[in-house]
Length: 444
Image (cartoon, rainbow, N blue to C red):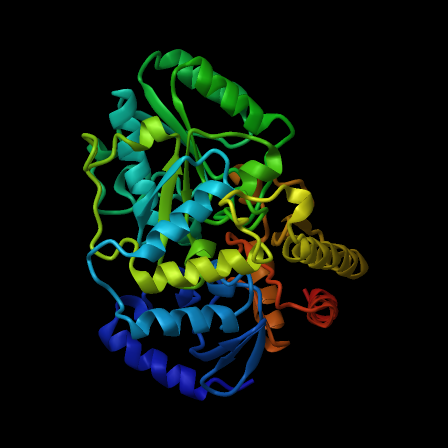
């Protein structure tokens, strides 16, 4: 593949944009080489400015669960934009999307829209502290909750990719109330509560961490977090920016049967546009301004174009059965299961094929998957937390990434990012990906 036009654009970008990119992981620093520039995406594919075509497993880092440029989302965005892109005044679409989220996620009784997942996580921490009148927050190493000062400690995503979990410019005082613990270690959580009695406002967690690659909660772990927080008067906060409406209609909390007090959402509910949200029990959410003492605001929050995209995405995922005529969500057995059954089927095919490819090539790989999220770690040991993930052979991953890119398969340019599948992917896409992986792994 040639990337002459991308190389020219990157050289130009370096003159005007720090690092040449507007989000660090895109710079390819973790894998070497230079990024390519995309000017078109459709379905499961993206095309770069040099005309190269790729099967895409990054999917805008998760939002494109229906594939790129889904016709119903595009139509909804066009219709909304014709009436005005933003008002700074309440509009009907924000009420519709809020009602849909509340009905699809049982733990959410009220929801506040934001413009990003980072904003949602920042706001939910302030809300938890305001509601409980406590200062300390527990988070887990490798879990990323946006570039919020108090949470950018031992974070995942781009911070981990560059080997600097703590960002410059964050005073130590801003993180003194953040307790960082290893994921999947409930004893560490109990010890933290024992050492900080009546001081912990809440525990924020990615129920399925997707910012240090992907690893799953051990059986009983999330249930134990629910029990410990409840016993100590603290709030359980699920950061479902990645997992919400992707692992199930009700997110990871539906998939694992856990009821958090508060949740953060993003990605999928924007239908590809910038949207985030925080929601939870009404008594907690009512602490937000204007009715409560916890201030939170956003000029573009709930803007009609983003709301239209989110409504179209959730309607399509739910088989256009989000609500019946009486405003209630139909029972699960009456709703279309096509979207999530499809994602599970494709994920299973990819997992089986990748495991076979690694085994045939004699390469040690741990392939972790949950629904339509996945990650291949180049290590022979199971990966349950950040310490396990760090054992992965990153030099081997670099070679694997570029080998797959040359095969027309685009994966996240970092060992420490999750991959995603959309309903637009086909069995043929999966087959091509697996065959490419088998060829590339034999060269590692």
